[in-house]
Image 1: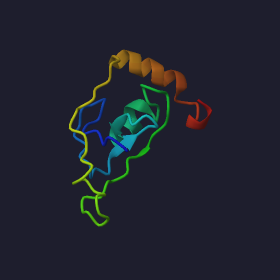
Image 2 (image 1 turned 90 degrees about the vertical axis):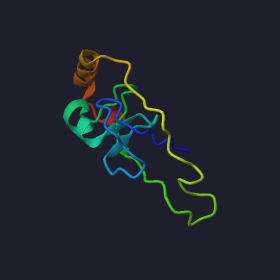
Image 3 (image 1 turned 45 degrees about the horizontal axis):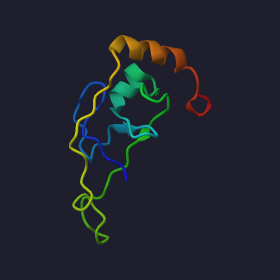
Image 4 (image 1 turned 90 degrees about the horizontal axis):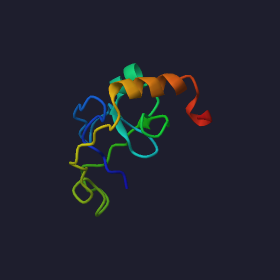
Length: 102
């Protein structure tokens, strides 16, 4: 089950569970759409993967036991362990390679 991390790992922008701006990679690394487009160029600085919009978990329990009420979003903020310079160099090296060919 997705963690639904509460923030962009790059700029630390709040990304609540209902955010339409949240993007995730295959490892659930979480970033805002603005950072994906302007800084990361669809390259996850952690795993080299591409991004997709993060799904929205239902807030209302329309199916018993299946909602934010029963599987809440994470409250633990996550931050990158790489410097801005390291990220820019990494992204520059792979941004022109399509995610399916990385």
